[in-house]
Image (cartoon, rainbow, N blue to C red; front, side, top):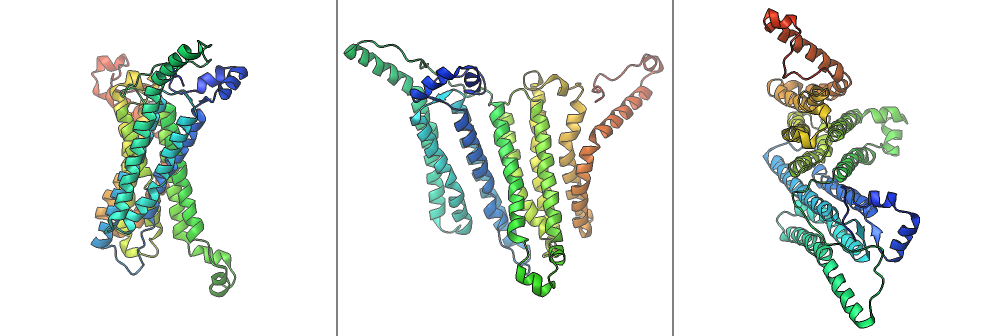
Length: 444
């Protein structure tokens, strides 16, 4: 085990090392940690995301009204989901911190990491017990025991192995040298570790974990379509006289909700990708805001379930629209907050092109502000035009993708208009020299 000198543990070491040294390390039982990190990131993103399934599968019959009891039940499950998502992401953050100082692993670390991952994968079961039997303390007890076990394995056993193992190895080597004589040191020397809690997160691991959440959310949407919206062959023959097209037309609202929800997930990922493309390093506050954004992104399958139920429960469509708008708003506003936080320390965290006054500054602002503005506008519109809440929501789902396509053109037109208005507002002698506002960013 050795401390890496870059933010990607083990990657550059492996690429630059010859095959012979890798074979020697494998013979000594030491391996690079990057493949285990990829496995852990994928597993943690899956576990964090599937927590939404007990919430989305809350059964509300068509005859049952969206009254206060249903609202309380749904709010409780959403709150427990958010808490569990944050616990999983805290475990992921601790895992990231740990392996920022570990470049290579041995069998002991690999098995301890596997035990930690196994405990985390048990969390969805305990969560389902809690939301299904809230009055029985067994689910809460199992959930708390899992959280304690995760903390014990990850924060104590792994950290003890990393911090104290070098000292134990040196002590064992000294005793062996006194008893059997000195021997040639191994090719991989063990170093002393330092652990800085204020060190920035590995940007690459933040991106990998976020991509996993977005991909799994998009996959959960189509799983619901495959499970609930495939017509029964007997019904097709008897009710629709063998016409599969007529049978599928009954599920039109579900497919419309699926395409709209998938477009929302995809465009939020695109905004996240564009943001982190211009981020140089991720601070602790940016990591926390990214976690909150991903928590609401994980709630988008619930938004799909609510909007796909318009046909069965038209009297509850206003509440469903507002829940969906709120989920989209919080998922996107935390993305905007990441960029705003990065602007506070822009020289260290951002590329020059998106800093205040940079070429891409206005375009990035518009891209990250599009979904918060659209979802907030749709939510407010339903307060005044509640009869048209479904049409307003579908209009937002259709308009935002076209907005992304036209965004750069619209930003250029807006900047040109602002510059023209500024030129008119300036005195004649300044406008004749082509003076511009120092606060206006350059054209995209």
